[in-house]
Length: 90
Ligand SMILES: [Zn+2]
Image (cartoon, rainbow, N blue to C red; front, side):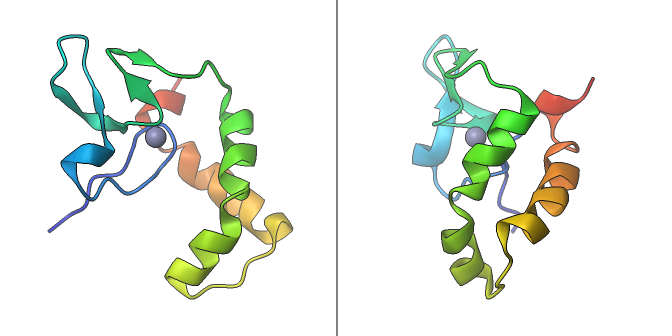
C-alpha cells in the first residue's frame, strides 16, 4: 500500500488524522493537516522556507530512515524532492 505524501511538505500521511481538510470539512487527500486546513494553506511560505522548516526535523527523519545526513547534505536532496510536489509546481 502506498502511503500518500503531503504535496506541500512531503510528510507521510499515515492516517486520516494526518490529512488536511477541505472547506466543507472533508479530508483532503493531497495535503497534510499541518499545511492545509478548511480549504486553505495554513502558512503562506515559499519552497525555500518549507525546506528550512523540514530541515529542523532532519534528526527525526535520519533516525526513521536509518540515514545520517547533515543539513548541508540533505538540503539539495530535499530541494529536489520538494520541487516535485504539486504545491511547488510552476
Ligand atoms: Zn504538509
